[in-house]
Image (cartoon, rainbow, N blue to C red; front, side):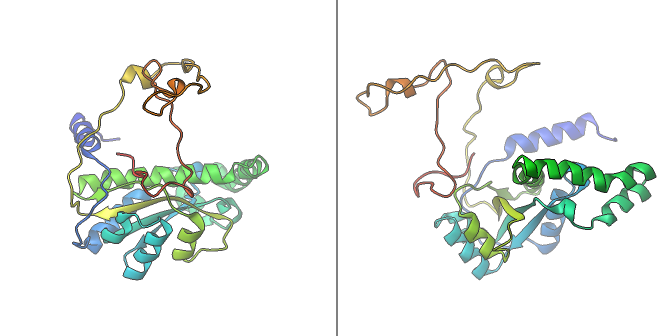
Length: 263
């Protein structure tokens, strides 16, 4: 595959340096660089190589204003010169994507038999997902992988990003012209631009808490909140064995003062 130890060190440095940035300078992102970064995002893998995700680049003032409204007035769309909307496509298997199969066969990546069988295999797999109510979830997974690729590539290019929560999906879909499309879903919003702030790494939990082998160790039991402490927190909600129990706000009902960008 051509990768070297130096490549790994470079990627590691970029991954450790990346932070979620909320404030941006107005300097534009060069069009050629934007083209390259979005192209790298689209190199991300996807189920059956259906590439059932797309990236909508929003740079106009009107478009960013609409996204600002859709996110409850968060600063990212107001300040960043580029907003990226990652769209998941849950019905891609029902479209004609013959170019995908033919390209894979022509490149020697797939045999003729494998390429010929792929459309029906993909259809059956995705039909089962629809039956179980999982089509949206699986499409969003593919879009999120592409978003992760772009975040790392942007950091390597000296630009900042932030994976955004706290937006109204219907309003976002209307802002990018896909309102009414039940087969299209908003996976993520991401500002892109030159940072106007320096964010300090907040730290991560110990590997032993998060990295396990073969099986996932059972979680500590969550106790039902009972008595209140003087600080207003129930005793049962305090950190238990180093594992704080938290409850996230729904993206559509997140409080305006809730930080919505993970660091």
